[in-house]
Amino acid sequence: MTLTLVTGGTGHLGRDIVDRLVRDGRRVRVFARSPSTRSDVDWAIGDLATGVGLREALHDVDTVINAATYSPIARRGGVRPIDFFRSPSAVDVEGTERLLSLSGKAEVRHFLHVSIVGLDEATLPYARVKLAGERLVRASNLPWSVVRAMPFYYLLDKLLAGLVWLPLWPTPTTLFNPVDTSDVADHVVACAFDGQRGERPEIGGPEDLDLVAFARQYQDARRLHRKILPIGLSEAKARGMGFVVSQGVRGRLAWADWLQRNAPGSRSAA
Image 1 (tube, one colour):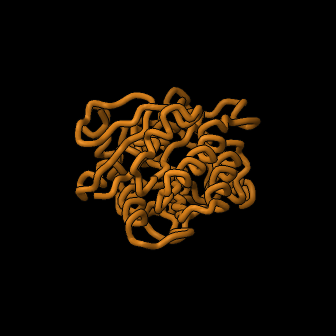
Image 2 (cartoon, rainbow, N blue to C red):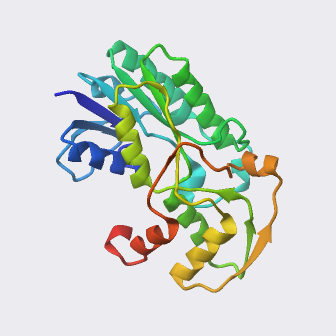
């Protein structure tokens, strides 16, 4: 039976990808800095940022799904001034380059890279780092695929939660369609094993709404009452900030349903 290596397999998207692979009866190895408690996968301990353990992790691997990334904004759930000037590249650029090189030496048959919709026009340093890593994949001699996804619901939830202490929420009116990681995982796994290669259909959520509408649904679900101040952005500014509407595949789970499933205190939110 073939073996699939998942990097970033302990993150939100990575866990969903691993769940789909296991559900489909595939052999899975997760490359992570520390193992979780699940025993239905193989664990390879190491660090993509340094390369420690990576060569051993690729032994006998046929397919690599690279879902690893390092976003300071996502980790802290908020934006700081430094995020407009620089973003670490050790995982997304140097780590991707190292993973590609060692995957070639290990004769990996398919390298699938998870990326972000709209990177070509995005201006934030993290987006430029992600684009640099994606370009390395596209230039590789490996059989590769790139799947671009819209920002995830859990990130939107964290960002809006960071505004709760404010009585007034300045909120852009531009349209976009964030998506749930479970829908992205279904699409990624399908693309990994359908025999096709190259640039694959990007994936976004089912609803094209402005951020004001997403914020109001969030407040309704969390029983909050805050005044929202709509802010208009030019199309160029919106695209530079990553506010785009994806083309291609659409997920099924709506934002309001995600909020209900992930209400504070619910099992899925734990």
